[in-house]
Length: 227
Image: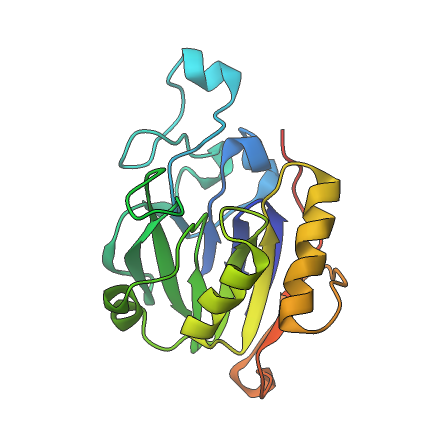
């Protein structure tokens, strides 16, 4: 499976039989999607920064909650944006309720998605702002890879605690702060907690046989450009 990061919480998982894209908001990948395609798209929360044109006119297909316009290149994909169990193109997905604010129920609800692709279990946490409940952890089960926001509602220590709850083999850091300098500082603090250095790489190719023995954090170069 190949993992590519497009900025913010937008990640593409490319497997042998299907492609899954998480959080492809128009403000990140542009209204046309800039060529990004997928069989399945997941949305962890409504679009926080819709483009000015879509605020005035409801153009394009929308997610089920109606609050997010799907980029043109992804309109034919199967979109999910809420908790539940799904099977699409032999890909198993589990949506689990999360919360975006530091206090339970504050700043809206979110959905983390567990994707079973190429025999790997990947969780995309979206813009999560709290540690996971015991109920959520039970629904999630064991994971191999965790895509985790860095520089958002959770500080570096709390993010490390969140990762400890999941105990993945690989952690893909998703810097979500708006300012580049703030992101650099957030990444430095996060990698200090996790060990290692925040050295960006273009993309990540993973198989079951190449999973590391101990939890390893990585950061990817952005393929998108936030509007």
